[in-house]
Length: 284
Image (cartoon, helix red, strand yellow):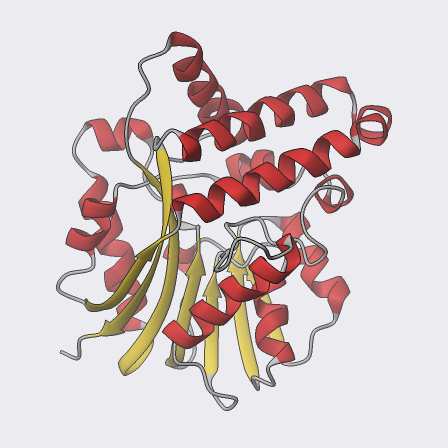
């Protein structure tokens, strides 16, 4: 990946206990899917997993790979559905440690860059939830390399699956650029301090990059859902302000409050969005 392991650890290895204070109970760190708008965060996160489960056409006897598996919330969902064999890859050692501590049946995870990953057998289904923002840096995007980098990712993923297998894919999107100086500074802070080395793709880049390896079967955006998700994260962060300041320091609270507040505005103002795509591999 373009993001290095050290950059990934800046983003995800603050402390598992820190993230546990403000994420949902399973520690999803990606957009939930609010289908009615009245769900709890936990219910909406499960709805997200259900959508991507269906998009990947997972069966109980499937061998499934989750690319960028986080703290294991999605692989845990797969295990709860009785899926026999589930693999996950991440570059975060703290996330891997959390998954190992959960002792999930049928789950194997590895700390490895996707670009170096070489599966021993073909997968029946793939899933990846908001990992692709680590593939292209702002500098590479400015050079016009984004689509080529994403296309190489989709090419490699297509080589890992059985012919015609499906891929449940989710990504954060960048849309409009704000015109206010403070908004620009807050977005730059989020990119440079919270997620160094990463960049959210544009929807049109993803649609171009899946070709010629994957067919787009379904596509749905969920900008409002991510706004609600980040709003709930911000509420829970503030609710635990005293504990966070005491255990992890004032700077951690201040930085994450600024980051989450920026996210809420980004989804509200259409600077950012989120997409779920059902892809089917095109056999050679």
